Image 1 (cartoon, one colour):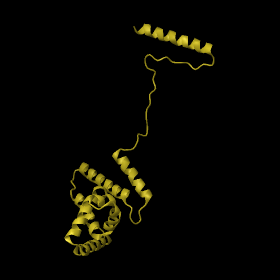
Image 2 (image 1 turned 90 degrees about the vertical axis):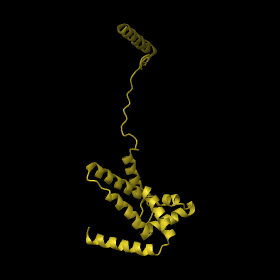
Image 3 (image 1 turned 120 degrees about the horizontal axis):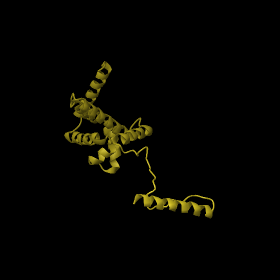
Image 4 (image 1 turned 180 degrees about the vertical axis):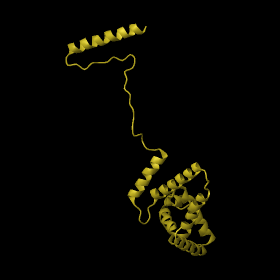
Length: 181
């Protein structure tokens, strides 16, 4: 960790402590509930709704909470607690990294705050769709075969030519049927 990152973390923690000192137990409980719901899918509005806010106030409170140092710190604590569960097993590390990427993509896909980009949301949704395998198959293999009991109708110019071609096809079918019995 560089000095700059360490200083940022200290500043964030100081802001968190100052904010936490000014919150009542009930206000902290509301924010903690929001954080629990937010880290589920990183959708602030949905988290506010699941935390009990009505639809009229959900967007406003989601934006307010996502700017709140207390909430930001609690989200960071949650993400760091996931990282502490690291096992030396390579498969487990790969799964953990995949989960972190998915959480980051979920956050980006649902972020509508300052500096938000519709293109970034679309790209994040596209990546999630591919990760979860919801995308349509790129190649389809269609095998057209003639089944039993089907008469092939030749495309010819005149009725007489068609009758000749049809008679030849019928003769060939009868011959093949006799050979198979």
